[in-house]
Length: 347
Image (tube, rainbow, N blue to C red; front, side, top):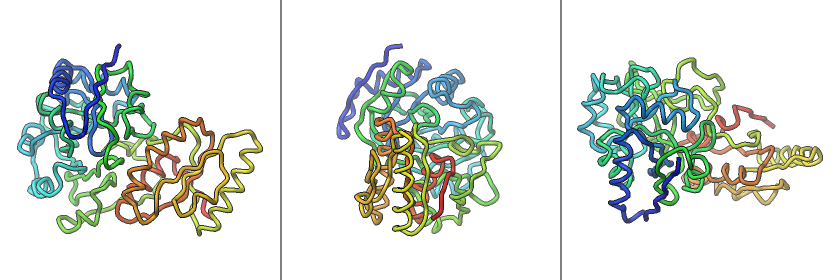
């Protein structure tokens, strides 16, 4: 399959390209497109065959549910049942934006889109191109991240092209994404709403509206049933083995440098992910500064780019410092722990 690539500016949506992309989706094809979080791999959410193609293109397990993206709050009644009033309160506050909510699905949504679940995950992206594409596609676009399953989500078009060229009909290049981490997922079908995946809409932001249970980011068990994307399978992982090191700053630096020396002696390429306050203290083959500790939004924005850049250098072993677990730091550590398969060394 030949993939067409359209480059658009953040301030100007190419009407011709978006119309063509919408037609591709209506015909059951696939289009990768930018959102404010990461790039999405879009298909018609109401087309059973489109969902199957998304799973095949990503190499994604078919029981890993997809998120349905819509462009208007009022359209929710077509795809969800028994919608609680708090959904509308949250939608008015956070949509368009990086909050996904789980509701009971209507018969209009095929089981293939929801991974066989009787619930549906929905969100409205805060991105002009994405919203226009959803409109042109008929209003409902299923879109996981536009990467091969298990790899770091793409925040730049070059990584979408690397993973999806030849697998999809079109890639819309909208430059680098703004947030850099996937949306928060909030389950509204339980007796007490639960955050199933942390993101940039934090517990602290949700608490004034609804009290929430927040997942323990150090939990290393996987559920038998994936209630939301990213819960059951290895996600966000670089090619190299990632190990997280937790402890006092000097002890972490000392431990990582000692391990790096051993890895180098074994002929392995080594990488380190560190803050701007400490990165100059390391002696690995590739040292990636992820940002200043006080700038958690910057760290979130840079995380997947750093993991992908380490992939470009064919790194064998990567060590990472830990970061704050407050606010969006919860989302950062959630992704790092998933990428490391919960390999944490405490020093």
